Length: 62
Image 1 (cartoon, rainbow, N blue to C red):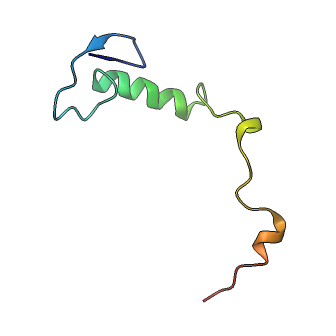
Image 2: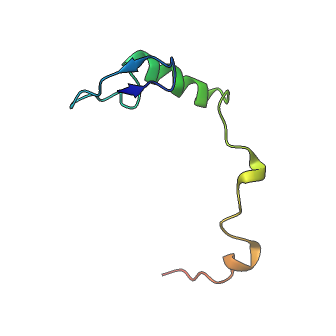
Image 3: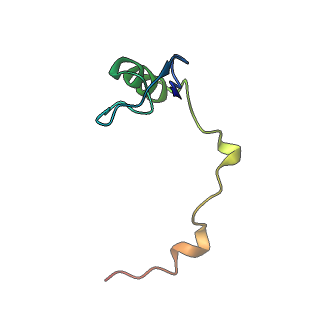
């Protein structure tokens, strides 16, 4: 049994469930909307910079 992260409903995973890990397309779209409107976001304090200013000079154009 799986639990939908949007509505907490328990459901069986169906082989061709394009909405997984959500129970339905509706829940998938609700979650997507929450990310797009920034109701869900990753806090900036948890993000480490991937490149700093010194790294940029190490790249060459090909």
